[in-house]
Image (cartoon, rainbow, N blue to C red):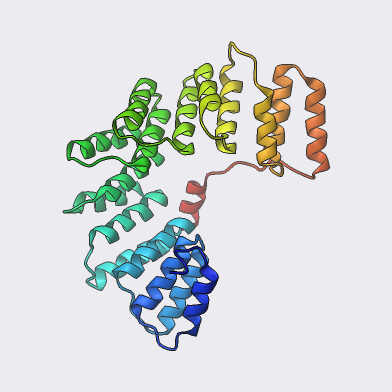
Length: 309
């Protein structure tokens, strides 16, 4: 109850005061930390659970697989999978779906597909996680195919399903299909677009060089664009140019949202030089130096994780 109400401190206090705990108690505390986005604390409770010689059940393992996804710990996830197989634990829909999510998040999409294809029963979450996993791992065409198959079987796509499929359309350059799916989401399924949906659309137009359309998304979305959408648009503008002049307010908004990220000042300085405002570029670089900020070198978490595991 405390965890569901957002007070993880009281939840932990009640748990600590218990003189006797069963698998439900331990599982509830682990799930509470997962829900509160504290995966390391969830892992710590599980280690205490092992010391107390309490065997995890299916519910515990679903939470632990979520921890693996948050921390991108493939070795730990594979160990849990092995434990499931050797302990003769029934691979129900929730547990199988959690395994799919863990493997997909860690970049092992083939293993995720293997589990998905072996499932006798699937729910909407199973389909959605598999579609999103395919899209995020560069298998956009397979994600779109699976999305239509899900619809044919009578499942109603939800907001997460559309995030995955719109992302796939963006990376494949399928602008018309992406527009149709966005309209279908709003008009047929009556789903209110989120920041992520608008971000997918802006990114899709930007990648296709349709800068005016991408800018229209930014200006008409009912909420203020976040830093991810702003950086995506600015990058697209720089790569493709536009018949319209650049809106300097977008860079100002980016610096307002993330004032301590060095790469944002580099973006701002670059856009000032592109626009011909050399004095502004010098001012931006001076501000960046004054804050002691440096541009962080980009890297791939997927590549790093695979090499380290």
